[in-house]
Length: 238
Image 1 (tube, rainbow, N blue to C red):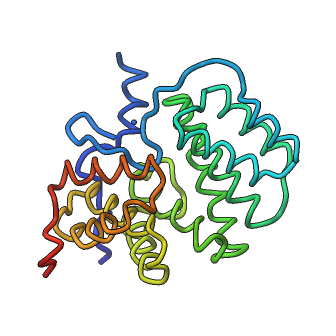
Image 2 (cartoon, rainbow, N blue to C red):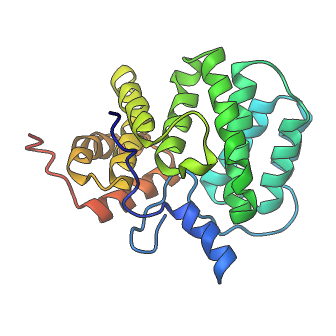
């Protein structure tokens, strides 16, 4: 008999943000900044940097430019909407395009809150397509995105995975690509979101050791994870 699907200890922050928009960076009682953390975005016009990237017609360039803006905290709702429309307009049957589509759609869901919930399945679809076309694209970037999505998203919005599969995917990726700092971070994030703090310890230690190699927003996520789970004993991990 299959084991029941593991559920996050509390709803991830981006889903709580979606609920808050309906009923009144993740959680009321669990202050995590998970993959699609709840963002407070400025309005305004589209960044010239992003507009120039979109002119190239390369979806991955557009997605990367949006990510750079997000990392610097300089993106806007208009940027995310614009990037999504630009990527949709340049569809290709490649792993790079599919990853860009999944990434940009995820950022759009974040900015739209509850109104973007119906597009969670779109993130899953394009991440799966990228993974199928080339599982080694950017050292498994689609697998990392997909595994995190499976851990934090309610099953209602997903078709092909759940939190158990997501955790398995992330652990395998951390094992096969230990040199990618974000992989360790995502496993720690997943365990803590699922309420299993103890097994997150070694992954938190690995992330702390490589903190300077993480992008700015992932460093903030790491700090939040440590604040939530407590500082691990990295000298005596066993």
